[in-house]
Length: 256
Image 1 (cartoon, rainbow, N blue to C red):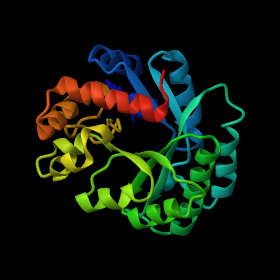
Image 2 (cartoon, rainbow, N blue to C red):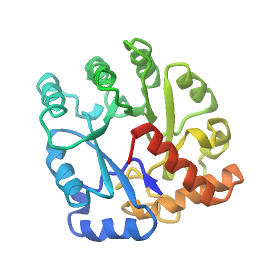
Image 3 (tube, helix red, strand yellow):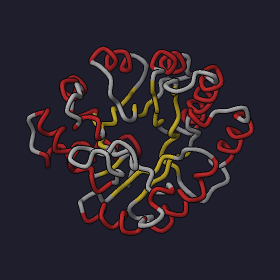
Image 4 (cartoon, one colour):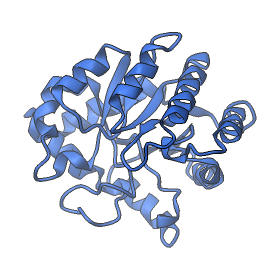
């Protein structure tokens, strides 16, 4: 099983990071993708990746909530890491638009997102999209891209209509995490429209822990709980979901 979006390098895991990694591997989550957040997370992300290089992959990007007054300098530094880093990045991410708490830097977020989409196209890399209360803006940027982008809408929680709109803008998968396990989630009804061939499993750890762990610090070892709910929603054996979503991740990110 592959956790396509987890932040195990963050401070929340400082007390027991190695234990968290070992629990993930022992639970069957043998490979994980770490998307970057901002300049402060680059070093801890790469350090953890170097210690577990056989089990982890990394993506580089500037998260939309980190787009502030210094966005130009920060973006330039992030972009330079694609050419001046020992790591091999499998995607540009996590990038996108987040207007949930604050719309102050909406225009700047769109500029940063647009540039990072072009970085991905220039390097033939997929993008990992963070979209929260910003689907119109995200689709506007994707529609204006110089070529058809490919990637994943991480932490997808949208509607059937959202799926249709997204599919018109590029070659996209949908990252499904603990949200699908929540009691009042309607996402389970959307999964058949997405189809197993377009689903990626993720945790977004330390956030959005699935039932029965909801309210706790999330970690990659909890991914099987999400896989089980996806399997139930699609009326498939969980092994089928594991195999298919893992192959989807290999295909999108070029994992070896």
